[in-house]
Image 1 (cartoon, helix red, strand yellow):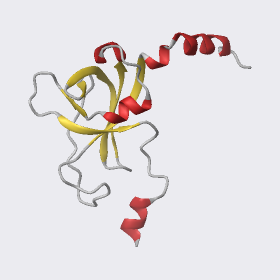
Image 2 (cartoon, helix red, strand yellow; image 1 turned 120 degrees about the horizontal axis):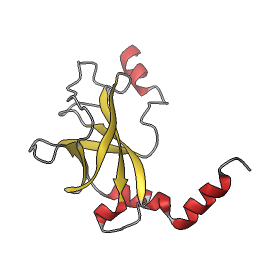
Image 3 (cartoon, one colour; image 1 turned 90 degrees about the horizontal axis):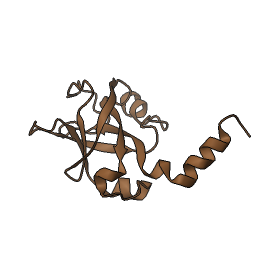
Image 4 (cartoon, helix red, strand yellow; image 1 turned 135 degrees about the horizontal axis):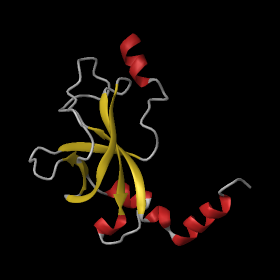
Amino acid sequence: NFLGGPALARARQQGVFSRKRLVCLSLDPDDRPPFDPEPPDAPPLHGAESIWYDDVCVGFVRSTAFSHTLRRTLAYGYVHAENLGGVPLTPDILRAGTWSVGDRCAPDRRDATLHLKTPYDPANERIKTVLY
C-alpha cells in the first residue's frame, strides 16, 4: 500500500498505459559500431522533433541529450496509440516496427533504436573494449 496506489490500479484497469507510452530512442550513428572510440556523429536535437514508427508519426520528442557513456544522442518522447489506429502499445508491438526521429518536412530522418529499458551499458562492454 502506498499513496496513489488506488489511482494507479484504476489507471491500469482503464488501459491508460496501453494508450500512451514514454519511449527512449537512441539515434543510430552512420555505420559505426556501438562503442567506437572515434568522435561520434551525433546530430543535434532540440526537442519537438517527430517520432516515426514505420513511417507514421506517432509522437514528438519531449527531451533529448547526448550520452557520453553510450556515445549516442538519446531522445525521449510519448507515443500515442491513436496514431497507430488504436492498437495497444505493448512491448511486442513497439519492438516490431522500425523507428526514426526527425522533422516532418525534413527528408533526412535519422534511424533510431528503441530501448524499453535503460540504454546504459551495465556489462561494461565499452570499458572492456577500450581497456583490454
